[in-house]
Length: 235
Ligand code: DER
Image (cartoon, rainbow, N blue to C red; front, side, top):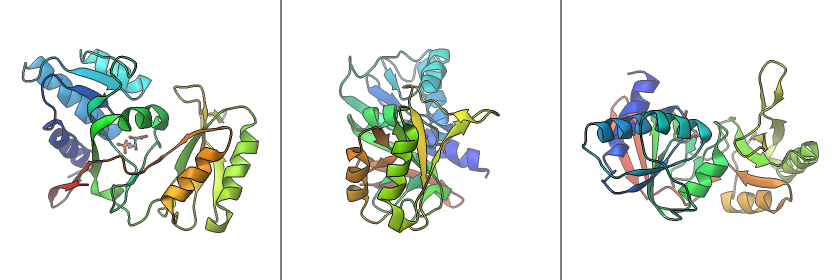
């Protein structure tokens, strides 16, 4: 099975949790894309009805519009019944790193206001500790004096051998700009992040930081698709 087929299996399994009448958080990324497609398909087949979707990015908004999924927002629905989204890393306590797609702020706003948050991953996303995989841990920051903020973030985790890099896009390597007009600083750790809660609080205390990609204590269920089948892990 290819990685994309595994993502699709996990996504379709998660959509089994969707009931008619629900307000749904629609995730962002290559795994969540399959879940949104499946929801659109079930609506079209009349197997699901009066669903309202709250997209976690402009990209997902466009995908949902193209599928005819009715959309709303958190102003109208401050409590979401079920959110389905991917993740970049999942630790054994269902803590996540998300945001490598750049949508972490709207994802965290939706996924921290939902009754159930079902995470869908292929098995390659499972890690023992967050941040140790050498992959980026994204932090959304305001563009104003971004170098200043990036340096403060790097200094915060100096003992973890942290390096902070501005996310760029395009060939002129312009700064990547999020749906909210902000920048993303990617933190690379040489060692895994120790106390996640402490790290989270320290990051959020820095003026200029908007939000970070550690999703702690938010996931209620993780669906993992692997070569040996699909596993469902509940909090
Ligand atoms: O950027 C994001 O938050 C995505 O949800 C990411 O965490 C997972 O993206 P993927 O499903 O394309 O791997």
